[in-house]
Length: 211
Ligand SMILES: C[S@@+](CC[C@H](N)C(=O)[O-])C[C@H]1O[C@@H](n2cnc3c(N)ncnc32)[C@H](O)[C@@H]1O
Image (cartoon, rainbow, N blue to C red):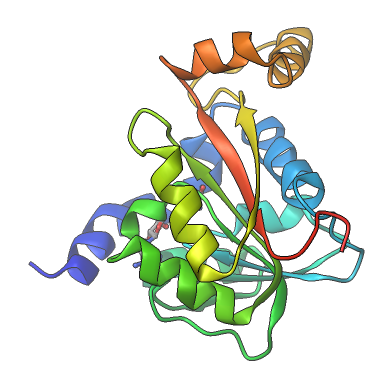
């Protein structure tokens, strides 16, 4: 079975209620992700466009109301679900998709492993991304030095990392969520937690952080 068919088979049946069911508290999870899409690395300005690769049903769009949003997904059912939800979502493969115009930011969440050749993927995204590429990365699965070097070769010399402590499968009371978010900036303690759970959010950018 080809990769495209495997993707359709795996994600098609989940498309109808993806955002609601993939996250125990999807509003809290996606709001925190969106906040970091804007603020990590060079800040986005209102009106900037974000291309969200492997976007699922495009649930992130709701939390980026001040920005242009274009979702891309390889599953026709996910694309349909996104459109039914009023989002702009197109069918495409993150490995070769090119947006109609260059965009300020490209994002890719829980899907970097769908890049056939990660270094080539970074180079491809770099061709149409003007400011930053934001994605999540499990440091127990990937070596940060490899990623940093591939990004540098692709033209993204800057890389800002932040531990992303938003629980996916459990819904916590607001004070616990706030404490976890505070822990993201705790340095050694956060890095210790990353050795057993959670991921980094990475913003790769060209030029200086303030350019
Ligand atoms: C784990 S889900 C993540 C969805 C969304 N980004 C999120 O974080 O909720 C992975 C998504 O990647 C999509 N996908 C898999 N391979 C892809 C590819 N080559 N190009 C574009 N999308 C792909 C799937 O259809 C699915 O919607």
